[in-house]
Image (cartoon, rainbow, N blue to C red; front, side, top):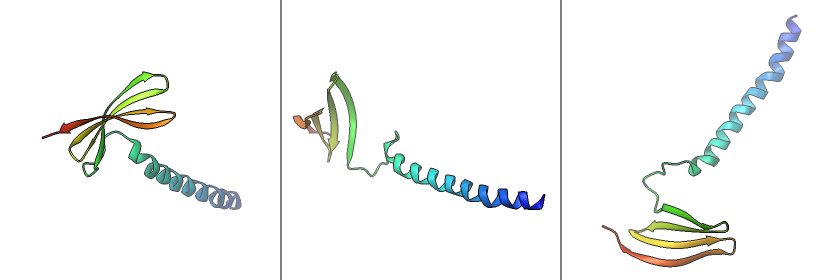
Length: 86
């Protein structure tokens, strides 16, 4: 009776600890993709719009300037630069 308890403890305790470490690792990896970016970021995605199934337009804000970029499978291309925001 006591040996079965110890055997379960020896097997399940490392399993539970491994799951906790794995969850913490995934949380750190996926935290940057969650909404509500930290305020100290230099680059912010203000808005995106799908133009076609393979092309997306995105408005980026960098150092007070807004940039309109096109994102597709071929890459990223600058479409237009906005004025300095105040």
